[in-house]
Amino acid sequence: MNWKAFIPLGLFVAFVGIFGIGLTMNPKELKSEFIDKPVPEFELESLLPGEAPVRSSDLKGDFFLLNVFGSWCQACITEHPYLMELQANNTIRIVGLDWRDKRPDALEWLQRWGNPYDEIGFDEHSEVAIGLGVTGAPETFLVDPEGQIRYKHVGPVTRDVWQKEFAPRIDALKAGAIT
Picture 1 (tube, rainbow, N blue to C red):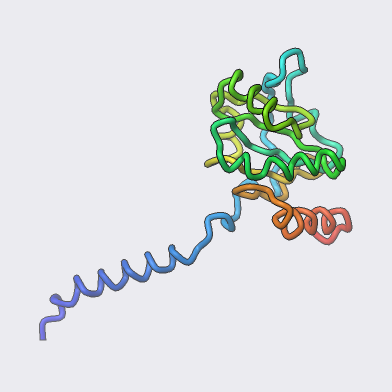
Picture 2 (cartoon, rainbow, N blue to C red):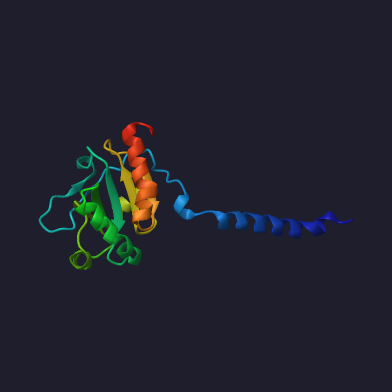
């Protein structure tokens, strides 16, 4: 019997197996290499005219969300009402990172949908987004009071996502259950 004839079949089976495993993985659940590492140092001009620059060194002191968004991002509209609710209830500080946008478009978008952000860095050329490993918008990072990234969520932050992913992590971190 000629075993070499089975090599293409074996390669095909291996390829199908690897492809099948890949299809079962959820890219939203892939662990970021930035978890438990400090937010990269940055200074960005504010999106809002007349506001002070947004500096990573000024963001320490309490938990906050670093939310990557853009006026071009349709999924950002999905999460926006819930971010507005978090802001209105003073639930957590939210820092915006306006990514790969044009200033007039972003300002018009905020005027239309509202501004849930305590401050907004204007990252037109992806300087900070690249440093954070951002691959799309929206992406939201949970940062602890020491400036360490503790969680990254890819996709819209909704009430369900907040209750299942963010709130329990914040509670556990405050209780010292997660180090």
